[in-house]
Image (cartoon, rainbow, N blue to C red; front, side):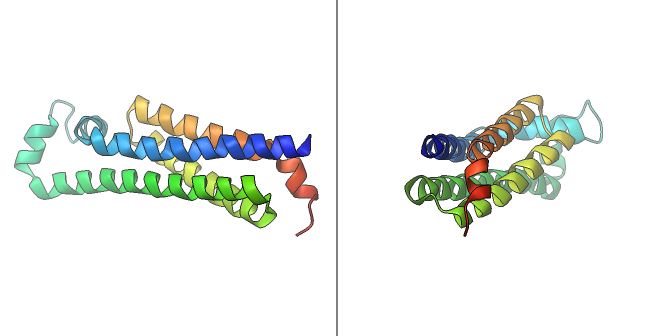
Length: 151
């Protein structure tokens, strides 16, 4: 039963890592649409459009774009990190790898969700929330095994 719980938790977090990679790639592909939504929420004036802002203030527009691309590459690297450690846990059931994955993933997904709560469209908020919750579920399922296991 415990091996089944470890396997299920590892598979859920493995899919969570793949989800983070796809999420980051979608941000890279649809960055103009997402950027206009971010800009609309934080704009100086609600009537100001992204295209007008980008033409008028190219340096500031580049900062917005750079921050969004940083978010996308962060998600891709987080996804690779989660997928690699999940696969490692799936094969070896290592407690230290689980602890590293647990702390790194919880902090990363929670910070991403909080940042997107402050400035983000409803779609980005939802995607971040789904990623955070699915990661928590994947980590909580085998928690009893890892808390009782000696290092």
